[in-house]
Image (cartoon, rainbow, N blue to C red):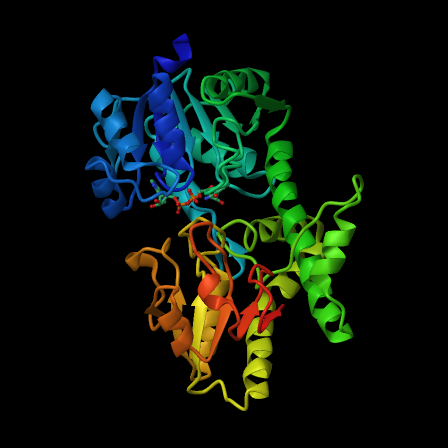
Length: 421
Ligand SMILES: NC(=O)c1ccc[n+]([C@@H]2O[C@H](COP(=O)([O-])OP(=O)(O)OC[C@H]3O[C@@H](n4cnc5c(N)ncnc54)[C@H](O)[C@@H]3O)[C@@H](O)[C@H]2O)c1
């Protein structure tokens, strides 16, 4: 065990990012304090129950049993720390970045700061946040000087919940610092936690790197979504065209169309970048704005296609029974934040459809109001006038949909009476 791991690490925010990080830190020997303002999350974790699919209950229970995982709702009573990592939400509020969670976390961590400690921000944010928002708040709260008395860095999280191939530990981790000494400390911290660290000289560059990754996906998904809409009107099968294009071994990366983008990353992060460009340069980042417009329009497009499908059957949406398959925003996850499927459900309900849905991954707590939960079996498909496949989880068997009227937004149902996006 390296000396760095025999130290106290505070992880602020025990959500999708902070919890796996805290568990890994306990595993490698840190004395970990996990802090979260959500009492129900803390209560669950303290009794060995995880609410993050990639973290098993046994892992939380095992961490508690080591005596090196203390999960709590406040930092009261602590006398300091060696390292602190901030992994709190960075949402949009009325389309603008909301850094209030980062600011609150910085203030509470700042009050405990002692000379020699290191603070790292992991939350996705716009270039400049670490140096211009985090550092001043830490300095004010502690009365210390960043660089001279303590170290500060930014290390964007790349965790991909539900991805069986790339975990927190195996995904290369970008690390950065406000100066050379900070970079060295932050690198040492993450070298103890992950397989590969990627040092980047400045925190702004590391912040931008994360936004580039997500903007790249957002824009490319918007491109294929717009192409899918146009191809349908042209009478061209977009899925076959994309499969053919995907055989090019260089210079092309295949993205697939769908009902829109969800989660807290793609619909949110690129807007942090365009906000920063507008705020500091006075101009727009047109690709991001266009991608937002296209991707945000997809749930409405799915509903229009469904209306047309029902119309062909001489049916109105009002009173139609629609079965949605998959509510989470991505496969093998129960995360419904910003999920396009939930927007489809709301749009259909507002037009008078009777909406049922199948998603074994979405918990009761997150299940959208007004949507009836169903199993995917012959009876539920038979009862529906039409089914819509929105997200395909690997443990959902689509065979009951075979030969039925299905709007397939993922091109995953066998041929029959299905209609692809
Ligand atoms: N989930 C992902 O896949 C993912 C991937 C990469 C980056 N990120 C980024 O990481 C950050 C965190 O995302 P997440 O998915 O873990 O969010 P989350 O909502 O699952 O977890 C954040 C937690 O922070 C807690 N919190 C808020 N303010 C707090 C405070 N002042 N003190 C203590 N706890 C506080 C909340 O109660 C919540 O439990 C965001 O910036 C997100 O964009 C997320």
